[in-house]
Length: 193
Image (cartoon, rainbow, N blue to C red; front, side, top):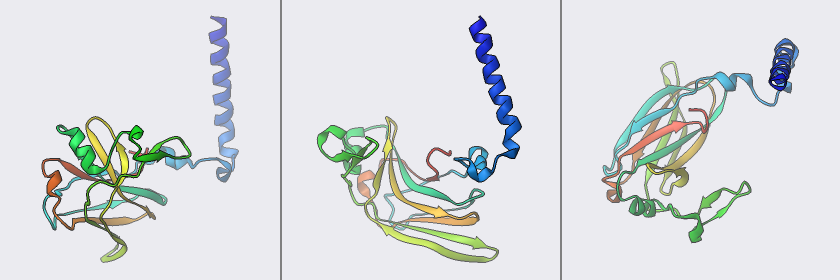
């Protein structure tokens, strides 16, 4: 029991010391930005129809209080035919030779899967003006990961300064092979939603 009391006293003393010293610390000397710990950042989820050429998903959103790199991706909701869908998307077992391990030991797939032609446009909204800050076409999407119920494919990552933006994703061709798979277009920051 003495051990537990002494540990709680040590922790309490440490916490009190940090609390007292925090206002005197130079914020730029910290290894992280305090606002990043508490800031609620946008995470957008929109249904997206890959089997219809010309299908468009559009959303407006306001970014965080500082510049962040947002990930734009498709989330394939798989319920049936996981193996067939994984092959179509280029996702395989890491042991089948279809990729390599990066410096952190994470498997990186080199399989690209079927073509999913998309156009991603990001516009900054300033008052009544809409200024395009990013406009790219894509045919191959990179693997972002997955689990038993979904596969994620990255469209791209874009650094956005604080502000109000309009995001537009267009299907440039119908992808009939994935017709039965519900898909969401999502925007977020890894680990922040």
